[in-house]
Amino acid sequence: MAIERPFNLYHYDRRSTREVMVGPVGIGADNPIRVQSMITTNTLDTESSVSEVLQLADAGCEIVRITAPSRRHAANLEHIASSVRSEGCKVPLVADIHFKPDAAIEAAKWVEKVRVNPGNYADKKKFMVRDYTDAEYAEELERIREQFSPLVKLCKERGVAMRIGTNHGSLSDRIMNRYGDTPGGMVESALEFARIARDLDYHDFVFSMKASNPKVMIGAYRLLVSALDEEGPDWNYPMHVGVTEAGDGEDGRIKSAIGIGSLLNDGVGDTVRVSLTEEAVCEVPVAKNLVSICSSQNEIEKFEVNMENVPLDPFNYNRRRTEKICVQGVDIGGKETVRVFTTQKKFDAVSHKLKDMGDFQPEIIKESSGLVEIDPRDQNAVDGINKSQESIPVGVIDHIDLPVIPAYRLLASRIKEQHPIVLKDTLFPSDDPNLIFETTLLKAASNIGSLLCDGIGDAILVQGEEAPGQSLRLSYNILQAAGVRIFKTDYVACPSCGRTLFDLQETTAKIRAATGHLKGVRIAVMGCIVNGPGEMADADFGYVGGAPEKINLYVGKEPVKFNIPQDEAVERLIDLIKEHDSWVDPPDQNDAITEKKIEDKSAVGSI
Image (tube, rainbow, N blue to C red; front, side, top):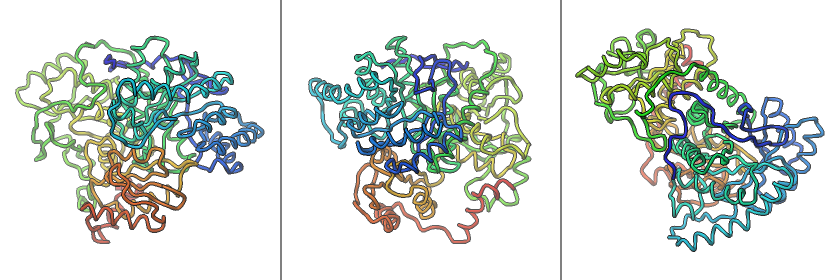
């Protein structure tokens, strides 16, 4: 596998790709980063499907995806497409295919693009442990070629584009047994299908490497870009970028911003989808906002830098080594958890109600912490830090003309590793109460979260949010989404689509209400089995739609309870958690009410 750096660490350069046309919409090359989403309606319901497509198009969605789980669903795309076009809407339609090659062939007759998942398309996924010989592996690949080639030929003939979309949660048994549940396995899964397409002289495809874990997703995309560069200049295919099963509300937005924003800031990504467990139309403004934020942050002159001193491994998460120091009675650096800074002004505003703030506690006050802030381009300032015999917290000084991410990478590359680094979401602190919180959230998550996933950062300071309580909540939620400090129940929840076998939003809310006090427990809520078992690799427990109004419960990847009536399933999930000694009783009702108030946006924002 190639190991060259897939992007410039310090200067924004959008990855150069060929153009792939999806109907009238171009992806890659000099086109803007396209925003897409996916309808949640049953594909057999023509009227509702058309209505949702039109709603998404009106919201600014540039490409709309529709699930086609069977040939019957795929055939109805003819009527959906016809009705959408009769309304004067030209938004390209994409058929989402997983298990059924015959559905893909049918869908390609009616839509502008087909998405295939290599782990599910004509491949085996039974979580079997098996050592494949080279001959057996080659035999499997030949079988896939026979199944996949007819679709490629039809798409080439009709001018239909394709997305070869690998999901971390649905790698085939063949890939899992040879490469493991790794970014490398995700890349090879996609390349196998790409080689078949190229052998047939078909090039109208894009790649994606989706995962619910931002670190895995970021590493997979970087590895893919590096592998394509090694293959040659004509492997310059565009990228569709997204975090799958991100969840809902602030958590879903933060996790999406970390994964998507990290890649966009490094110039990787030509079309995006923010996958939220909410109405599909809610995804579009978030995606547009995120694209705008990541684009505007990179409009800056380049600066001289030594490219040899690399402060991170772009493919594998390794936390930067520092020495542990004690600041205001709190240990930071070394192997300590990532800490939360705040300012004296914000601390004073909440000091009288710390007991009511639950887990969202300020840990270190900036002004009295000994934090040293420098411009990482300033050699004298860097030398001053490196001459210090004692380890000290270091950050980037405010009000300089550098984007946050390259500024902190440069800092990490120039100061000695002994010094802990304090990350900031912005170098321009705000005291404006009228800023849009979602924009502040997306910027903070994409900047701080990206650096944390790079392994840089021992503490964080959110400066872009004026409200003290809200800035603290945002800080902790970024740490949780980046997977560096788990302080509450963690949920992996997929977005709704036409395959979903229950009301995801309602069910996720019920599960949160029942289990939200289980700190450190990770629960997956999946609408169907397409990605369910695989995306639950990191989850402790899973709640998965197995059939209409029937739920299967998992422990890790293993299904343990089957066909549970939906109205009983949440209670049965609680029983399962108790069986595995992961349950604690919820806090006193009065405490629960207090915590709920603290998590409410309006309540925290007014602190």
